[in-house]
Length: 149
Length: 152
Image 1: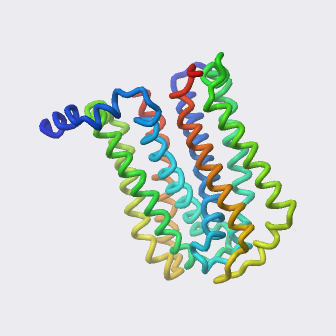
Image 2: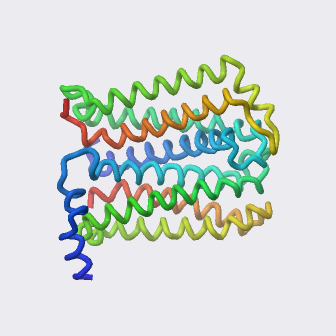
């Protein structure tokens, strides 16, 4: 368990999963904003299960890293960056629930090649991009803010 | 080389970046590097997987329009990377894994350039798939080299 390569190996897995996740989220959100308009949204949104799988891998590897070095996140005192990261992930969850529950996802599925999305879809996509950028920001600050108040 | 090293050691901005404990110094540049890299690698991985046969309903040619966003990610990563490299020239250049990482990243970016025209033309031949697989391996290797770098 204490082999030197365990931590960088988990980190590699964590990072690759995040890249796939952000790749799917980024491409879908950019298309909603009107980038690569030639793409119909339904097949693009079919990539969402990849993002879900990548999230599960990222969460599990993240949990493993947390178990290896709990003090970095839990302190005491609790790492501000860690708390903010979890908060942002919860907000992302709420934003996604909103996207599915309001029928917006189905509406966006109907946006074909060359067509524009609605303003509400653009707002949800913008919130999603900003929150994901925030998650990356707090993740990066995790080591720098450990032990700070 | 020595002149370059002397310059990076004397440059006020790089000294600040290296020595300041402010999270607006090194951590912020590191964040820009991360966000650029994660998007560049992630978007490339998705496009490569499509070329390898996943998500068949997704038309290929319009994917080429994402390349402008990907280039923004590449430049963000490259500029922040050069700044971090300059702030710590000796350690980084002395790390063999850093050189592996750079080789893999440069190769991945070259492959992206080569594949763009094929994507625009929707021409997915066996060689395109081989290039896509190679690109996936380059990104995976580059991330692994980056993560293992701190341990060498």
